[in-house]
Image 1 (cartoon, rainbow, N blue to C red):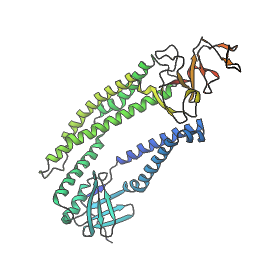
Image 2: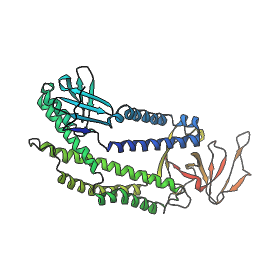
Image 3: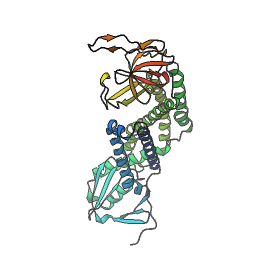
Image 4: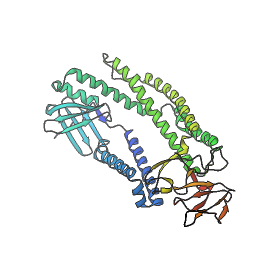
Length: 399
């Protein structure tokens, strides 16, 4: 088989998709670290009993992403496509294929920028906007085989492919505006962490500063990525896609207006910075980072809590004499997820009360004063009284 050595349209998969792979790898590492910590602290059996569904979701994540990467994406990242007047040449390492347009049976749209070309031998070749200028493939096949579909359907999807291509190319400008990007992605998160610590430490004792700043960092990263995605989609749908549609009758409608896009992106980033400041201020105001979600490890009949029940923990209630005060009767989490009920604070007297065989109360002879820096907590069995250090207090369970 003879292959062409010269080709005018050499299409390759976009380099920034490798960053997506790294992001998923980072997320996978975070999930593995979480489960490793859970197994180390609670044991394999207890984790499976309490976090069965969450563990299955994590396994599903690894199965789906692993299958997607190794079964499809990995090979595509190394593949190049050449479009010629009468055929398409695909090369993936040493593997080379030629798709003759005369052997094409049909060409169909799947969704968004995804379409496939079906050959007469039944083989389907899928393409999408992860491939640079994928519209060249769409045009190449149709130019040679206009009998495959009507002109209106061809033109409508061709415009979509160009729109998606321009959208993907703009992602390469992610950090083009260095001053604004530095302020948005570096200065603002640092200011957010600092301001949150200054305001929240006035009312809450931060026992584990490493965990505290890690949560803040994750909230900051999630906010920045979410807003960046929202602004990107908004600009694509409202401004850039509309501009391409208006250029349909122009021969050069495929060309990007680099200056126009640069101005719009720069202004949108300024608005994004303003929006980010507002969201960060709202997060600090609502103390969102000072809440956590946990699960009950075992049945606690005295507290009417069932094993596996999801609880919301307000981590602001973790000290005595602070703004958020604990009251007698509050259910709290301390230590490594141990649940108890507050009986008394430091300096108060506390003791156990027994019953005789007829059910009458007997005054306790085991009366003790709650030591300084401790709380008296009723244990999960509903009988024992435990003195715990304030530093071990994680927070109050929300009703």
